[in-house]
Length: 256
Image 1: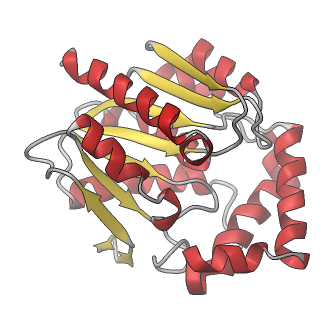
Image 2: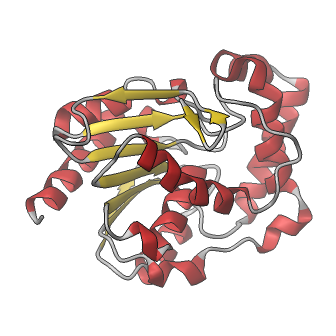
Image 3: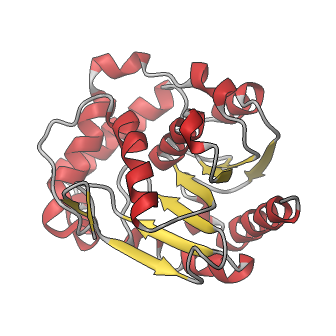
């Protein structure tokens, strides 16, 4: 699919947008269409919604981008999202954002132009500010990429984009200028129901992220905190994450 002159890898599950609302899956900082595995299709089946999955530029089989990525890259992706929704003729959207994707979802929701079609948010391990645990784990990931087997493990998802995907994300988060990155001032501008899913053992963020979102968002916020779960609840606790997501979506649609 060509969006704004850029080639994006996409996948669709379930009914088309003229039939049902669309779940839009926004991947993590090292994610792509393939890293979601079967989860989007399972959520689509459980809710009766369609599911749009895509790899952002520089990820998966999407078009590469020059490095370094700007420190505003998540804001840039939020600004690109409406064109993607328009291209797929999405009429009513529920965003499911994982990690960086959760931050992008919040930025989109905080833009008043999202209001006509955005119904709600599911945020999985989102970030709204930088924590020391995040920087430490991202620095460790760089060591694993340079000296370990992480590059090869990521190659099966990103193919020729593996350096672009990793270094773009890693370089931005480890840039000293990124330490002041903060979305908390945007949260009161989010006016749609929100579910936050967080693993208690997340190596990239703490429950302080959840608390900040719950305090700041200008709508009802539900929390799903999962024990013995890391940074990717849809992979670490798939049944629990599916149940929480499907229940939230069904409640959301029942009030339309």
